[in-house]
Image 1 (tube, helix red, strand yellow):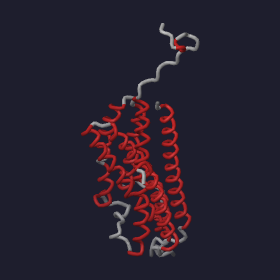
Image 2 (cartoon, each protein chain N blue to C red; image 1 turned 90 degrees about the vertical axis):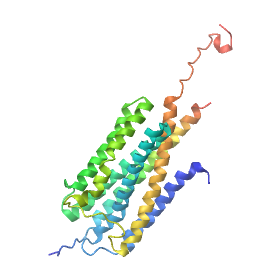
Image 3 (cartoon, chains in turn brown, purple; image 1 turned 60 degrees about the vertical axis):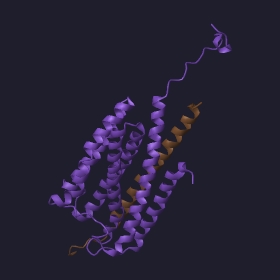
Image 4 (tube, helix red, strand yellow; image 1 turned 60 degrees about the horizontal axis):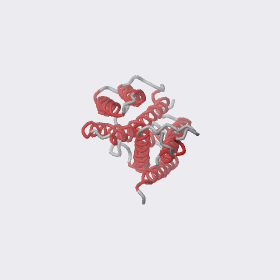
Length: 47
Length: 236
């Protein structure tokens, strides 16, 4: 009996941190890249 | 420091704090008595929840100001806060599912807290989708501000759902409701995601403003055919 105690949960902990890192890094990179490309395009069009 | 680089610095500071708090939470904070190591998910899940709600509250404030003042600059800020809020709330649901499996035995349950959070993601995600279908920037700003104000009604419902209904989800975790040993990684990660969120909202708002300028700019003059005389400056 485990007596209501959760054991060996590290796989779930790593999964939660990996998903968080992946989503936050991916989204931040996407915002930076979109911003940089739009700003460059904007500077080229501007007289 | 140039104001133009402030969002970049905020994102970098947020990432550093988040890395520091996560290392502390993963390797140095003690395991919880009953949940064991699984409780370490709290150090990312709870700060994501706080900041997700904060981003959507910012979206609500920007929507109200956008309607009140009528400026398109507030619409850009609204777009930034909406997108960052939806990303954080989607991540919140994923982290919650990963935590739910070892503690509740299921990935998902139609529990009031989970259901109202899912409604939140779909409502605000729907507003982002709606924005793609409206070409007129003024109509887009008005409609999305009204929709954001209506959708925001779900935010307090999400917050109080664990108190109003007999929920499977525990009541809100705050430094007042968890052991002192868990305070620092929780606070550091909360500030980490806060800085990350503020920087990303600011950058995303600038991106929206640039795109709107492109949309509203007058069309460039048509190219003059080579050899037509006009190209050599002759008056027709």
